[in-house]
Amino acid sequence: MFTNTPSNLSELPIYQKALDIFALSQNISVYLSNDLSDLKSDGSEDMNIYFSGDIIQQSISLAPEILSAEKERYSEKKHKHIASLRRLTNRLYKNSYRLERSNSNGKDFLPILRSELRKFKKLQSSWMLTL
Image (cartoon, rainbow, N blue to C red; front, side, top):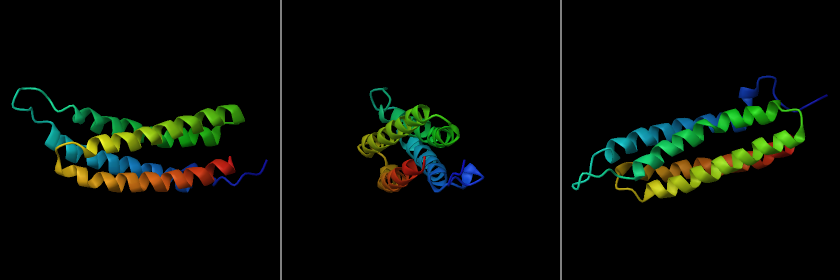
């Protein structure tokens, strides 16, 4: 059976972009958490700090889903991984908007993350055709 998949799955452009998104979201989250970790004057915490953790959790799951879809033999199971990848991407996008409303200087980096996510979605569209 001949496939267009590189012999080393980590050479896939979509996989590389997923790793870039993870690194970017991790850096953004660290930057934001420094601003958002302080307690408010009433002693409560900023609820946006949880979204900064969410973008890390969601972005770290992108690459394993890609690898799982690539390695899967049955198309039904491939489609489950693809659907999961879409949900993760959409949640990342939504959480980046939520974080942009936070009171932090790091929110200026969130449009960069969304730009990378748009590129990832384009790669995802062409990658799905190769599966």
